[in-house]
Image (tube, rainbow, N blue to C red; front, side, top):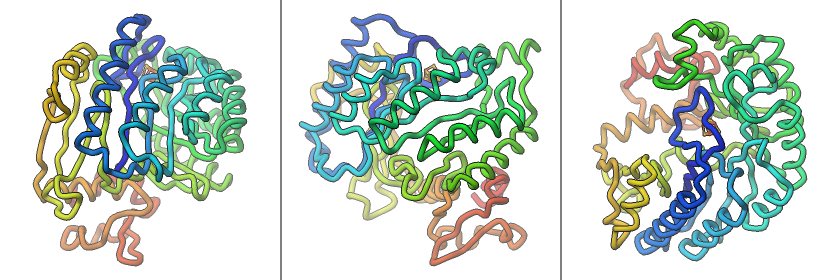
Length: 373
Ligand code: SF4
């Protein structure tokens, strides 16, 4: 089983962001959020405390903007509530401007062994235009600093930002690759209601076209390949042995518990024997609704959820295919029986009972999924 902890606080909101995160300077609110979070974790132990935990991921928001004592208190609650003796990966997300040597030392002390840094771009014009709080020099400096404490450092990059160009992307990927073991390279999505979407709609900002962005992704794959990275998922690249176990767990259908506002969970009521026993639930995204719900609940199964569904077998198989084909590991071939028309076979590789998409297939994955699901 995997655990995800959501810390939804940021110093300010980035222009493209529609994650469940809040620009928050209210210490009292942060304090009550952590109290509720720890209560939820301790409650969950009564139902799932026997489960062996494989991975822990502390995400956000910006976990590194919080003082290290808060992270410690959550880790203490986790250790007292779950069996963490076999954890294989313990990640935390951080942003360059709030990483300090003291925080890195403290994360390492509580068992974190992987840090994922939100670089997003090494072009200062891009960083400024989307409201990031760091500059490229700080990003490089903090990645190097993180490397003193963690062998497993990952960098997040966004492609499709206003000032991106093939030369710029080559430069930034080439500069980051030698410093990290893992990179997530996401294509910018313009989300409804974000300031960036509004500025683009008003013609105040121009973004690269879809074709240009698709070319950038190919370029990233090529450059990272030259540096020894494998594209093991549509947006993720790793050196051998450094693919994110936590995220692979999501894509491979492992059970997970999410704690915090808006966090999702997926568990199987029979321990995974039958596909049809899969339950998904999610917490309210709103901070006060989450805090109030957890504080009023007398037990874990009484916490009010924003969503709760028992998935049927058809839904679960579609989900397995959809998530599995994102990865180089692919899916059990049997799941695809009778689904792939002959003209689409060219996009599949089949090996040892598993089917995965070829590099070309990955580029056109959405179209393929529409045909086979
Ligand atoms: S730091 Fe991350 S979570 Fe926070 S506003 Fe920016 S993109 Fe969103």
